[in-house]
Length: 190
Image (cartoon, rainbow, N blue to C red):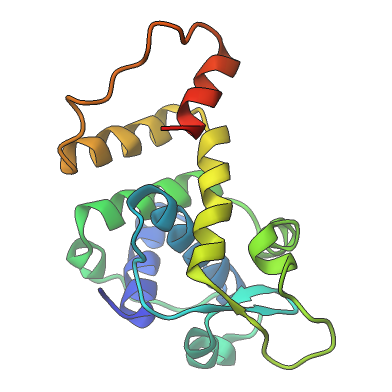
């Protein structure tokens, strides 16, 4: 498992390739979505550090202290090869998150996290720092997000996961699944 700082460098490398601008606030939120979705899909974290429920959403304390000097400005970052040091599963998750959320603004991402259980269930107003957002709570929440996702890129992420885990030949859609509701119920129980 890599550190959050190694992950942040990889995320910013790939963001540059995809023409996604990165502020400190946006970096925190995109790292949060990568971690949460990775927990749901692969049942493992990308990095060990935990998020905390801060005023502006989920934050990794060490990441905050590394980049707080940039305030609301874009983080200057020279692209490197850190993205290619990630596992294929991590690379795929970064691409998925950048493609689906990377064009959103920092404050839109903050707003999204404020409406999601992992942050809003533990946030305490008027405190410095914040309560820990557990990986279990992130996994539980993002499990429900996955069930509601029905797009081609996510289907590719799931197909690759099934191949890597050796389950690709074992997963069959039951004959009784005929409607979208049937499919969603089947995925929830998968």
